[in-house]
Amino acid sequence: MTQPQYIILLGPPGSGKGTQAANLREHLDLPHVASGDLFRYNLNNETELGLKAKTYMDRGKLVPDDVTIAMVLDRLARPDCAAGALLDGFPRTLPQAQALDAALAEGGHAISRVLNIQVPEEEVVNRLSGRLICRECQEPFHKIYKPFETCPYGKCYGEHLYQRDDDKPATVRNRLKVYNDQTSPLIAYYREQGVLVDVDGAQPITEVTASLKAALDDL
Ligand code: AP5
Image 1 (cartoon, rainbow, N blue to C red):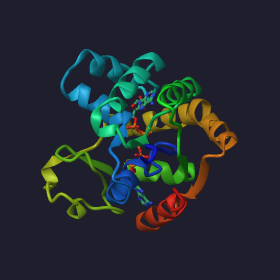
Image 2: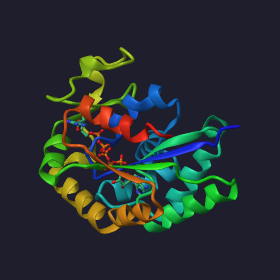
Image 3: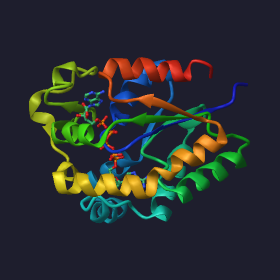
Image 4: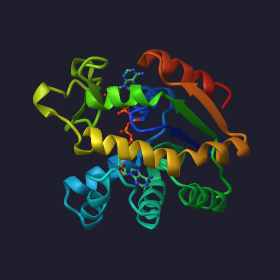
């Protein structure tokens, strides 16, 4: 039996993790597990978890590790993740990364690859200020770079699009600071494990997808 594959998309807010996860879906045939989407799902359903997460998300802060780790490990334990998962937005702190390693090790598994998507900060701010999300399929679009007519599900009709509350410029600046302080140390953590590959995320969307596929070629 082949080993389950756990692939992590790492990168600052707006680096294109969600966009690329959608593009890699068919290539990898793995479920897309995005911690931000799980929080927003809970928030839309007004669960206790969602309302708690909102108080952090609105300020561009990270939701506490205990809550986040429990939510994502619970998602990874579901049957559709038996062959692994494409992780987006998790882990984001060293305790999250260590908890994930420990949980996978219990089942005799490990991280297969970490794709470190590199994009300069000014480009990130530019992307997030034009981002629109579809309420129907959760796909991220962009006013200029990725208009909603490209929806692969044919479900988007302009009126379903909204701007995320945390894409306001002041919150984006906080999110970038949080990324630099708390998440970027994961680059060294995974490089040391020998599983990290750097990818230039400042290219056009389809070229980033091609680079990511090339970085997964030997798996
Ligand atoms: P989350 O939803 O994970 O947000 P994020 O990591 O900040 O990432 P984004 O979704 O903003 O960006 P992305 O990299 O997916 O870019 P996208 O593809 O959309 O987290 C939100 C909040 O939830 C956090 O702040 C925190 O509070 C909480 N949270 C989540 N996970 C947590 C965790 N593990 N621990 C604690 N708290 C957690 O692309 C952006 C835009 O650019 C789009 O408009 C897209 O069309 C465009 N675009 C993409 N690629 C390109 C390209 N190559 N060229 C031009 N445009 C492009």
